[in-house]
Amino acid sequence: MKPQDVHETVIDGARICWREQGSGACVVLVHGSPISSWSFRVVLSELSDRFRVVAPDLPGFGRSDKPNDGLSFPSIGALLAGFLREVAGDAYALLGHDWGGPIALAAARPEAVTDLILVNTTFRPDFAPPRYWLPFTAPYSGEALVVSADLFGRGLPLLLTAARQDRELAAEYRQSMVARGARRTMLRLERQEGWAEVTATARAWIAERRPRTLLLWGDPDPYFRSDELTWLRKEIPWAELCRLPGGGHFPQEDAPRAFARGLRGFLLRGVGRVEPSRTLV
Image (tube, rainbow, N blue to C red; front, side, top):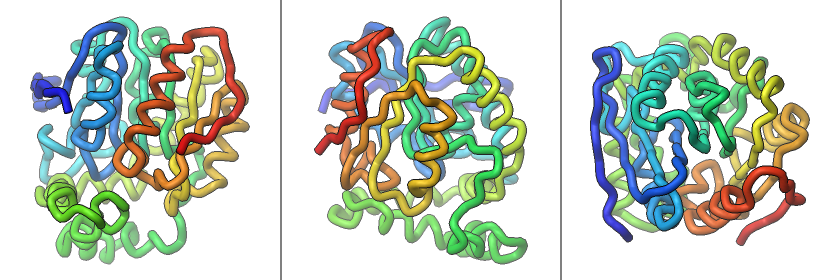
């Protein structure tokens, strides 16, 4: 794997770290909760021969600042907006995974987004997590399970096929939730604090500007189920679809090279061509 430079900057008093590799047209990879840019390490290496790939650690996660009280969707989005202006520049392809999808959509300047890639995510205004998720978000039990007991952090490796097969990888993912600020941020996101604001912003500019879009979808996903993909295809009917069997909810980790191939092909095809739905293995 090629070396990746790790940088940091300060946006509105908050330290934001990011990985960067390669040169060329800029591609920004925005991770979800509760992971970090580290999950994209293989993807950065696979794309860096043709693109400048930038992957920030969202505030609240990774090496970026993690305030003890955590952060909401709008507060992370505001900091990411400053990061994009400073680091990504005036034109970039934008990828958002999981909660990084609506955060990135709310943070970006629409006129700067040359291509949009959405990975196992949603910005549906009435989205509700699966019923089995309720104990992690309910009053009292959410604080007890997510923040105090770190139950989700300790169980996170079980959600990734790659981590179940690699002890060092599992340990790395457990580390992602050690900081109390990361646990509190995860809880605030799962409780969808500021959801109406970020989803309204996302829907408005996508409908107006109709960016060239790829839905890069890992299967099966126990959190964003098939209903979310169906909704996205109705909301963005011009989008391409590329499915990643075995990719699960974290396809950049569980199917990284198929993920990179799907993304690379979409970026290289350029504006004006829409491919039929495909499956990568």
